[in-house]
Length: 93
Image (cartoon, rainbow, N blue to C red; front, side, top):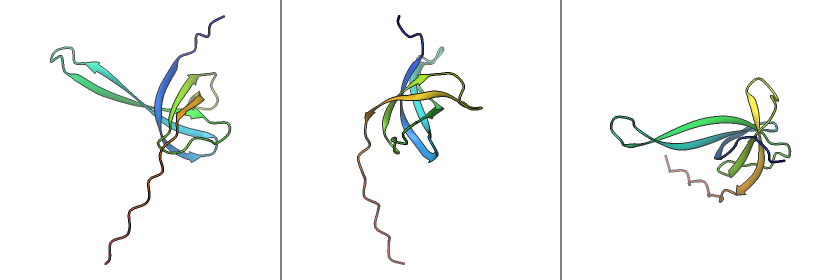
């Protein structure tokens, strides 16, 4: 039987909580009057059982039963890992 759960793909924007990540999902909609393409973003709290997600990772999240007040999604898979970026050197004062 095929699953009827919704799936979304987004980028991890926060992993400061224990076993929880914030995933930002962007979508494009066309303005009804001006016919311009608009970018809309929404944040979802998702359960990350193994604490494997890092900032900037692209993940697929899947709808699940309520796990807490705002958490109704779980990380199904990490699609791509974020590349490490070296911190900027501090400017002399």
